Amino acid sequence: DSGVTQTPKHLITATGQRVTLRCSPRSGDLSVYWYQQSLDQGLQFLIQYYNGEERAKGNILERFSAQQFPDLHSELNLSSLELGDSALYFCASSGVSGGANSHEQYFGPGTRLTVT
Amino acid sequence: AQKITQTQPGMFVQEKEAVTLDCTYDTSDPSYGLFWYKQPSSGEMIFLIYQGSYDQQNATEGRYSLNFQKARKSANLVISASQLGDSAMYFCALGSSGSARQLTFGSGTQLTVLP
Image 1 (tube, chains in turn orange, purple):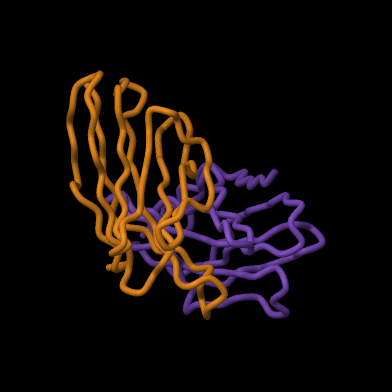
Image 2: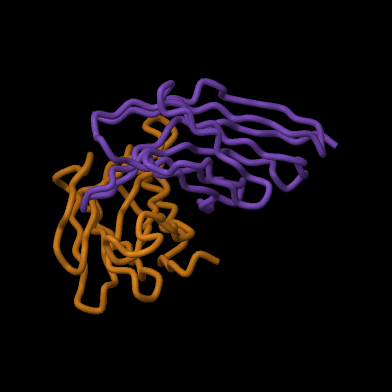
């Protein structure tokens, strides 16, 4: 158990809909990362938050957005869903920047999204 | 831009033998980190080992060791005494050491341990 939790585990929804994925980082971790794993694109970085602020953006579509709340949990919002958005979405967390082992990212179990 | 290459889509190894999974990388960052993750069929991503670009010694974690050759830009994972439970997809990843530490992943190597 990595200590990172994600809900829900599975999500099935229709095209055009909007969903919210939730992530709670390991206790004490300030950074949260979102990744998408799909068959055709592999594992791709979407976005990073550090202590509530956006720190880096990757290949995140404009239809997707994220935020990190004061209690450090994060949500990834996916809207106007398309069939191609079906994927495994991971959240990862890491420790205080510059701290011991702060580079290690621990992944949650993922949310499997199926768009029909 | 950062790039990670894993050239072995699939590997087989006999139980109790050692196996090396290849990984090469390219980055313009002067300081970076290399990671290996294991993804079993259940889907979770399990952190295995980390190597910093300025670390003098190769990283080891139990049966896992990272053969880091900076001049060749390679960071191969060596698994000793393979076990049936090692059968999984293995991903190599490259991360920067700055404040934005997102990982760039390779395409993965599917390892099958044979009894």
